[in-house]
Amino acid sequence: MLDIKKLLVEDPESLRTKLEQRGYEPDTIEKLKELYESFRSLVHERDELNARRNRESHEIGALMKAGRKDEAESRRIEVRKQDKQLADIATNLSAADTALENALRDIPNLPHDSVPVRRGESASHEIKRWGTPRNFELEGFEPRDHVDLGDALGILDIERASRITGARFAILRGFGARLERALINFCLHLHTQPFDPKTKLHGYEEIWPPLIVNRRALEGTGQIPKFEDDLFRLKDVEDVSMVLGAQQTKLGKYYLIPTAEVPLTNMYAAETLEASRLPIKMVAYTPCFRSEAGSYGKDTRGLIRQHQFDKVELVKITRPEFSYDELESLTRDAEAVLELLGLPYKTVELWADDLGFAAAKTYDIEVWVPSQHAYREISSCSNCEDFQARRAMNFLRFSPGPNSKPEFVHTLNGSGLAIGRLWLALIENYQQRDGSVIIPEALRPFMDGIEKIERPK
Image (tube, rainbow, N blue to C red; front, side, top):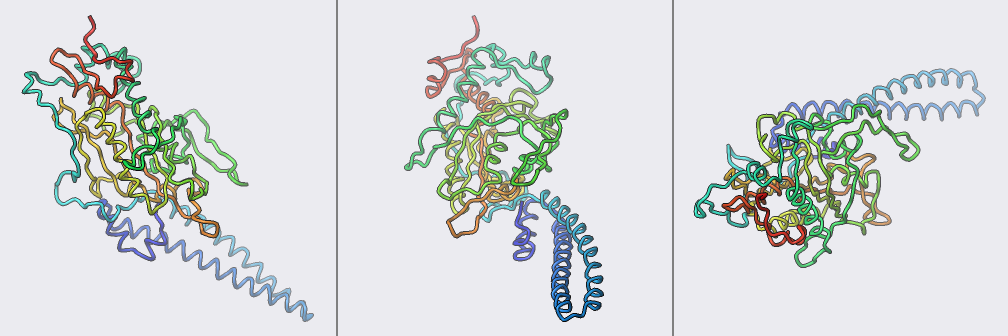
């Protein structure tokens, strides 16, 4: 959530410019301004009436001391009428506050000043390319896609998965299942290595989070309300609540997680962290669940766009002044996976109008997929600045020092990596003329030393 006072009062032109860069119409800002002015007007009216009431109560006390009881009682009757006015203002103020907060929750994060603005139909802003794609033509054969390869090797079964559940699910079997598990373990092992001060890589704490979260958690990270249609909700579960402080807080219904970013980022919601604990770096493997609403008809073949998929996620919670350095190192952590596995990739910086709802800046990492003759996204690494910290339940802050006011943390996240896409990229890039797949050397210890997946005899 944005700092409404800073943007509408101190720097309204920045708000207008950056929302327009994201593709939002100017009337969005005007509506927000109207709601804010209505809210501030009610606050001013309440404060003035309270001040007047306090003055008159003091004067009534003075009249009583002076023995002018009839006059004092007459004034007291007038003051009681103000109680009704204050109650009406409180009701209107609560409604105005709710309307303003709901409007703010629909406004995305603002692009960082360094984020490029798209000019015309220009492609993504490429900043790095690593590795050279294999030239299969020189090797004398056309690369097959992962569905055909997986079917021939007996390691991928789309048809039987559709019988069990429906479209956009897959069964991995035999060496296919082992490869998935090996890639998960490889990523977790890599990212949990001690932090290297020279390379500034890794050093994450492994977390095993819940796969079910409440509505407030999804609001905190920005998936709700904007992308609620893309989530799987547990409809038969009643709304949940908890006691937070002295107050019962409604948390809403349960949902399956779309990414481990949600439980990891919300782990410290409603807390004020000591500055010495930052940065907090977490990594988690989880299955993820997305309905992919509105995406039917594209990427429906194979593992590119599934309703259930595996992912290793990286999350950082850090001080604001270090968050952009942490974004660079988080991106490098994700890139390191592909480099160690020898998979060609490129890294692009997203245009302002391509940014995710909560992101202030994002790098996409795209791995080479031979059958498509194209690079496909395998990770998005984003700095959300204080956007999620402001939306989190009762905020997520840190204390800079003993006599300092708490400040909002910055949160970052990125896939390290999306395992299904890593699986398909690996078998396509390492396929051989005879249909077998070479296991890259770095992965073999996690595959019990197996060097090659071959057709079943």
